[in-house]
Length: 577
Image (cartoon, rainbow, N blue to C red; front, side):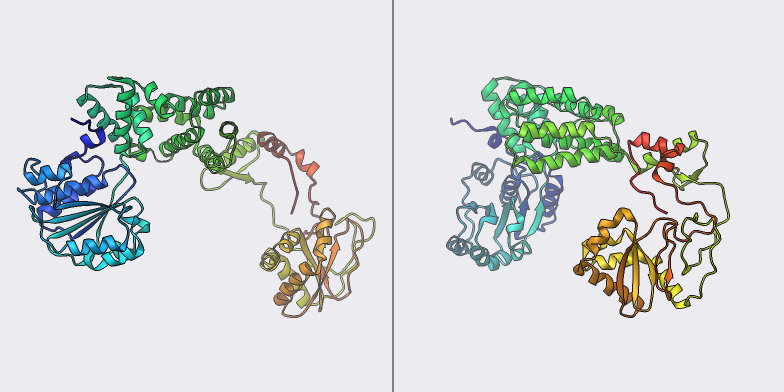
């Protein structure tokens, strides 16, 4: 007698034998019991999860001599013929090799004939998405209104390739990938029945390699029995299929979380020398950290992870070594590595560098940063502002009366005098309209820059480092600090200056030109027309007698700032009002 492979020998013969598709089997059984059997069914899902097996089982349930019944007898002539694939009433058609309109026309001619033995003539079309558009269109009317004795069961791995008009005429069932725990349980059951000793880690490795497909797991077990005989260990599975052991994954993950680069590099080198697939290793690590992230962020959902109990215990032990923010960053690095893997000549180098980056990442949340700053402020004896969420924001100085708004003046500071220290000449009369316009431009300057950016994005970036100084009847003067002199020079280009003039003209409701100037240093005179307003050069909107803005060097001397710079290894880039 010819040998029968395990995938065929252990094909489900009852609805109770179907693994991991309870939502489908229950619906089909209820339909049989209630006599609500549709004329067409569509089974959708990845390979090896039971689409064709369900179609055959359903056909057997409908044509059994005791049926239609949810529990076919498996003894009558009809059941035996369907199980052996020799039934004249159940025809399996391969959509890939019978995809033309002529084959569909032949099928349409045959459906009119009554079944030979059972109550129904059943057509099972596998990989139905391979039919041509003409073949689909030829099948439409027959599929929608077949004779009462005809049923259609369609199966596909790519439902998006099927015409919507076909899908709408069927009851659709989406089959799921089978969880690893159920695959482990099934292959262990088969191994016991076949007289094979299969340890738990070996069964888990088979389930990992099957990626949710029970048929792949059964085929792998068949191959391993031929390779090792009656005793199979995890090492045998890893050797045959190039997988990485669960313990190795756990070791790599812990090395990443602890920042142990030497262990990472050594382990990856050993795996590469053993011929392991680096791309598969990267994907399995990504899935591993995903499980750890779910456990940290949603512990109540951890039971739904596709892992066995021992893996869940390892996740719980390692959860104290990291944070959700760091795991998100690690997942991002591994995802980027996966995208680059297909173009890399040395996958080992790519995986090594990715894992080193993962080990060195120190991502922290905003709340954690605020907590650290709060600790620095407390250690410096400064009051701490409450953000309302338990984290600190910035130190709040002692309450002081708010300074009165500074009036705009069309004056020049006397040369050599300290700002706000020496008396100034009385201001000349100014136009109330001009006064309100400079205030409006100053308050809306960032929004105006964004409007300019819609026309010229580079002009927006250059304009952000400036501020309006003065407004006249036909001109707006814009000032730049000396450190942004290069930005001012680039903004002089007509392609940049024209959008600025248009936006300011729309805001002021008249045509204006734009003049760009460097804001002169403190104590130097600024030449402005006599009929416009000007903002204070180095410290706008400051009350007389107010302290000048501190420089970078002054801020570095502040204890809180110095401590924050030490904690975050930072530097002061700019100081603004």
